[in-house]
Image: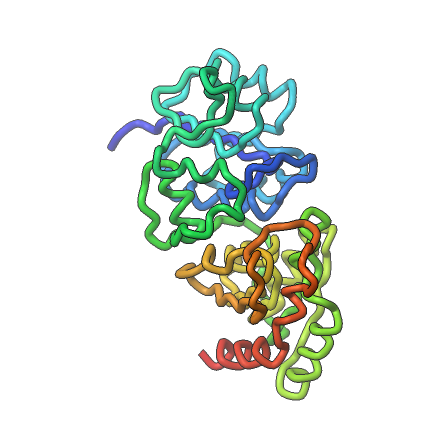
Length: 309
């Protein structure tokens, strides 16, 4: 048996894996999604760097031996150390520039190309990750396949990993994960549509509306109380998948093909014929809103089918 390797993973959530933009708002869903690569390093010593807001998603993960919070102290912690593998999943120029000083035998993800004065990726096949998501329309892979390709491996069905002390106690048939974060408001399905969906389902199924939006332990506890989760393309989608739930995901401005083939995720795309879809815009510029064209009747039908499986 080989000796454990020293692995350094940088995933703060300030940038999203499939998006070029940088934000001060941490994408918790993106942090959780990237935990899927931990399956590759089960026998290794993994040091993971994340933002303060992302720590609750990673705190108790047994595959992370050392969790560091991004900041000056973290830089001191890793300075002078040598790693077998460095995986940088952040596109921030400052982070990429700093990591060039860290000793590593093998590197994956993103780095700062001094010659081009821009962010680059070590894998030629994943250079399109440096474009905006709206430019990924011809890419047929799902997000886990792309993530695994980025670190030089083939995805074989592995999902995100979340360790929680909350016991799975399902008391509701369906959970409505209706709220979305402030970072991407166009992903939201109008509340009127949610209410109509409730009317279509409430006679035959028990329904619970989202709880704990700003309290992760409460959020996880609520989600564990539901058999099926209906959600927009948000943290709830990947959290539900990590908790082993059947997840019905509603898509409009983002690309539903990004979850194609992922176990227990059932995408329902908007029926609107918009030439810009998927646009990935934070504000709709079309004369109609794509999420308005996602019929509650169709979502209800998918719920019924999934619950019968």
